[in-house]
Length: 268
Image 1: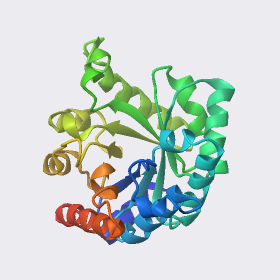
Image 2: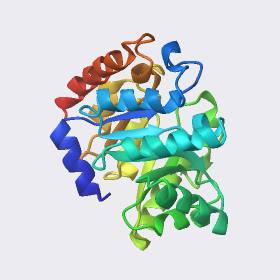
Image 3: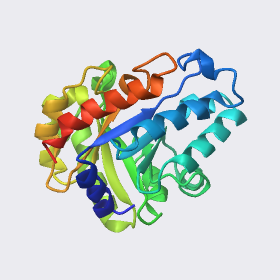
């Protein structure tokens, strides 16, 4: 997907909302467990209830990989269900080099037809370039994450600036050399750093997890992170998909998604 197409959808829906499909068997409503594929049925109802408010869906691959072949099949069916105009993110956090990265890229971009994938940049350009060889596919590089021990490496001084800023700076050069697109993962709980991120990466799209259950400040993210071309995909997972626990779970998810979209609308 081209950045212009993503921005058009943001404008049309007045939303930056990305919904994380972190679908866990022990969290989905009990009445679905008797079905042949409860994971897919849960995702199906969530997507149908929230697609008017979301501009992206982000399945977390760990929740599907843990189920073996059945989980991969649930993921495949989920991907076929998501409307073509809605951006998709494989939250896989892969990080390797050479042919291994190339196979990861083929898995997510060809076999499952995701628009983007999250990638750990620790091994440098060699680990990212194979993903960027796919035209109009995206990588979201882990830059400034929301976990407590992020400071172990991300804030370490590197030639006069924190390491996360070096990641932001160098990776924008990679995008200019290859046909794919580079974005960055910046946690919503690091909203106070968003202005610093924008000084280094003024136009890049940021995937921002941590709204909702993790307590991120939505208003601060919107005020400091938005660009003229959108520049944000703001993710909420548990706060939406588990908003309800009964047979009306999808309706509750729609209410939670709409509530976030309404807050986002004034910034579009």
